[in-house]
Length: 373
Image (cartoon, rainbow, N blue to C red):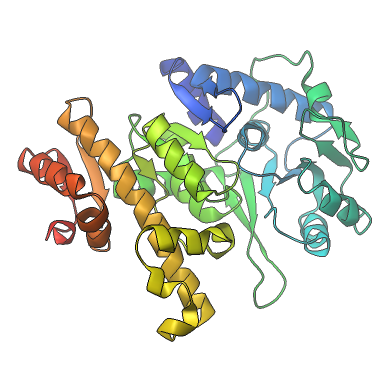
C-alpha cells in the first residue's frame, strides 16, 4: 500500500518536529513560523473543523485564498480526511468563481477579506455550495455562513480517524479556460507523490532548502512543481501572500532563501506597475516603452517578467553560494543557468567568483557552464 499526502506530513512531524516548515514575514507584522510538528497539529485541527461541517470523503473544499498559512492548513486537512481540495484563482470574477463552484460541486468555500465582494456576488449565482467560510480573523463578511476561527475553537490536534488511500482524489485543479470553459483536472494522492518524486530527482530538493512561494499557490507551477515536493522533503518555505518585487528581494535576504519556483513562468499579472520600476533599476531603460523596441505588449511583459525573476534567482544563488563558501551548506544544485549570464556577470560579479570557487571544489552541480563564460 502506498503513501498519501497526509502521511508524508506525519513523517516530517515525527522526524523533523522542530524544523521550520512555514514562515510568514510581512513588513510591519510580527514574523510567524510553524515547525513541522506545529503544522501537523494545525492541519489536524482544520481537519476536525471540516468534519464538524459535515465534510468528508470525496467532498470538494474550495479555497479562494492568497498564499497564506490557512491555504496550506486547509489543503493538507482536506487530504487527511479524504476530501478534495479545489484551489481557485483569486483573480477570477464572480461569474467565473461561480462556474467553478457549480461545476466542481464544492461543498465549502474558504475566502478572506480581499475578495469577499467577489464571493458575495458569486454566492448569488450558485446553489451547490453549503458552507461559505470566512478565513480572516476580522469580523465575518456578510456572505459568510461560518467563521474559521470559531470552527477551530477547541478542536483536537490529533489526527482524525479516517482511512485515506493512494488512489483517492485529493486535488481538483481547473484549467484557465482561455479557449472555453475551465475544465477540472483530478489528481490522486498517488499522482501527486509520483510528481513529487520526479521533482525531487530533477530539482534536487532537500530539507536544507529555504524556498520562497512568490507565485500563486492556486497555480500548478508553484503548488505542484515547488511547494508540495519541498514540503515532503522537510524544507522550509516562506510564503509571500501576493507578489511584490521589492518585498521578494527583502525576503530573500532576511530569510536566506536559496531556492525558488522550479519554472520561470510568465508573471504578467504579478508584475503590474512594478515592471517599469524593475527594468529601470537594472539598466534596461530603453525597454520601458514596448513601441521603442518594436515588440508587442505581451512580448515586452515576457521580457520584463524574465528580468524580474532572473534578478531574484541571481540573488538567491548568491545567498546559497555564500553559505557554501562559509562551509554551512551541502552541495547546491543551480540547474540550467544558460539564461543567467547577464544577471551574474553584470549585477552580481561576486557570484561568479563564488561559483567558480565552489565548482572547483565540487560544491555546486550545474547543467551548463554558460553562466560563467
